[in-house]
Image (cartoon, rainbow, N blue to C red; front, top):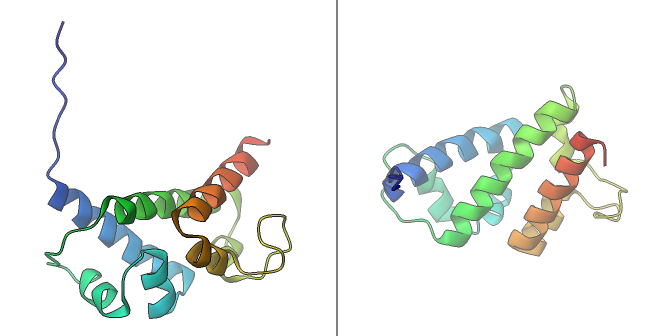
Length: 129
């Protein structure tokens, strides 16, 4: 038996991911520098990438970051009510992963591994672990 997997155009995937991420950065109230840092882009690249019609390529790392950040956004929305859901990433956090720092700062400094750790942490909160 052969199952055909639907192939998606990488450009379409990047377009959708960037559109979602731009909305998330607005919801979280991130600065240009914070949004660019989370996505592992220069400020000027992020300025271009968040606009419709961006034709640049995203690296695998950048796509993984955006995917994880979309997951973080969803987990926050499910676990917390407003306004905490939108403020959580930019509030100082005394939890064990953050040591008083803002989650957004630890994610920028720690890169993809820290972003994935935050996502796992929030998924565990949602699951009651």
